[in-house]
Length: 120
Image (cartoon, rainbow, N blue to C red; front, side):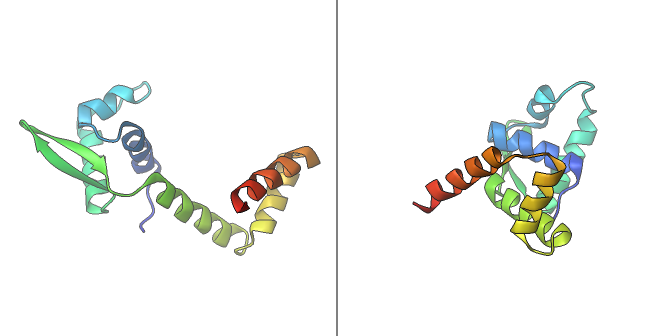
């Protein structure tokens, strides 16, 4: 799966939330200052080229919808982060975040409870 730029990822998050939209609909939910219509249209076409998005014709325009599930992209992104920055070690990543974000043992216990729920 290809990696997305920050702008492409922003559009994908909107499409994941909306499930489908035309370019005007995407722009409508974007924060101020709103990007130009042509900018968003270009990014959506790039996402089509990367096979993240497809479209169907509606009237004179197009409705865009995601082809890649948010969870699949999230998993791929997290795996890349762990592999590139923590030598593939989830333990190293968790240790890093505990030190840098001043997590305490209560936070770690809550994480372990969540993990144990999923294993049950």
